[in-house]
Image 1 (cartoon, helix red, strand yellow):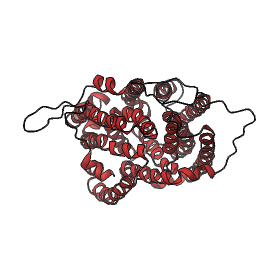
Image 2 (tube, one colour; image 1 turned 120 degrees about the horizontal axis):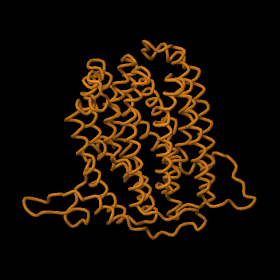
Image 3 (cartoon, rainbow, N blue to C red; image 1 turned 60 degrees about the horizontal axis):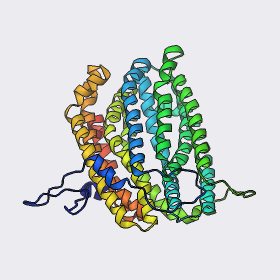
Image 4 (cartoon, helix red, strand yellow; image 1 turned 90 degrees about the horizontal axis):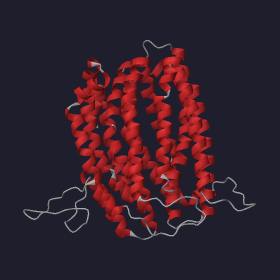
Length: 465
């Protein structure tokens, strides 16, 4: 559906819709609603009856969106503030390893096979009264076993191949190879732990625990991005120390997320045991496979360019490319809090057969995202070089990365709006069109990336995006 999304990115609503304001003339002119109007219309508590044993408070859509926005804004802000310090302390090659780590983590999501979003959907259906708590617990236990087993196996494979990656894939010029190899080994463990954390985060998102989740994400972001500066100042600027510190943060993150999820679900009956077995996965297998395919397509779409650049560019130049892509991702961050809030709510409405309100929410949120993403996308595209120069204080780096930032900012603006058709299909559990469209898109995208990056380097990747 990605190809169709690019063509159908924004829905058109007539003047009768409460989220739009029409003006007569040559035709209806769509005026996008202010955020306060959107929240006033859609933030009313939903009347669904929930399991009385569910230990959570009823949160409004307004609280979910605003808390997630606050968290995303904070995480984005500290990323902007801290990145120049990373470059200063770690150097361009050291930061290139951080960029490689982020790319590696994204490719690791291919192993998810759609289980995390499927669990989020089942949690939302449980809140909507469409799923029994015992069945939900069995599904959770089955997914936990799969995630832990796959994470351990994948981490061991990466550790075993760390030497080859350091010497045969990455173009390292100044960093000691033994440090690069050790950093890759630590990366493997950190990524595996964060991947397991993603399962619990998806479950909490499906339960609409977004207010708490936003707060915890802010705490973890502070530990990851801000507190690490003390490590650079007082201990070492080595990438090995950096990733060892990230390992400790990942362990803490996983423990707290698991504790919160089990503390939110109803207390298990006395003597009731939930054994691990694969049988609970059978009921959600078809939906999970659809999600797995589309998730894989999304990873391929968004990470193939970074994978190719990590092979073609020196590690220091790869750091510059990563920096430009990171700044451009701010456009997507503007829309992600809304999607995080509306997807479980739409799924819940669909489970309760409240399709009219679900469609109204979908329409209003689409318009809101366009209001919020178009301005930053245009600003970053038109003023890429001044933004990078002001941010990093490095004019050479700004000149090198500015063309990439321009192209990626425009592409991310389009994709922010294009994602909403997927959210609607996800809520309904009907992903056939999305699967077909995504397959077509990848068939075109990957060869284009290979050709353009070989000819134009990092700027070629931007043109394809």
